[in-house]
Image 1 (cartoon, rainbow, N blue to C red):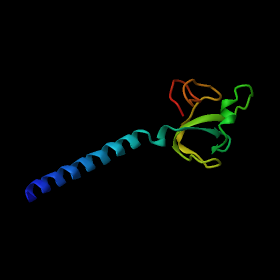
Image 2 (cartoon, rainbow, N blue to C red):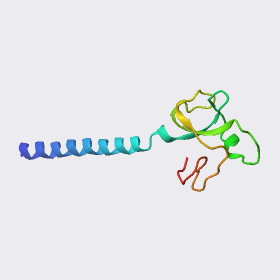
Image 3 (tube, helix red, strand yellow):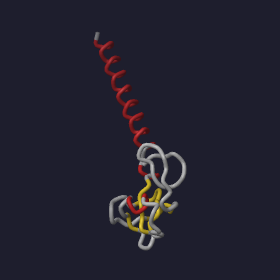
Image 4 (spheres, one colour):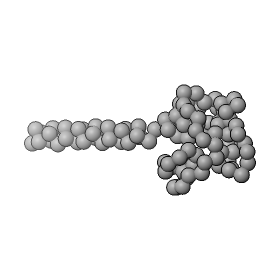
Length: 103
């Protein structure tokens, strides 16, 4: 009886570890490495997404930025890449750049 309980407990532990690993991989797959945010290219700081969404203005300094660091409003960005200005994309909450990746 004790051996059976030990085996059952071991199965539960392995199952829990595997579940945690799968969840961890899922979270890593949705990491913010590719998260786009609107950036003022004059000083490389995060600004309101409205500046990049508004295609009616000629705000040439507002561009979408992907990857790297700096995600909060007003923070300095680095290590990523600057994308297009004001290119609206379809999809649920999608914005900036090209393609169908949502934000």
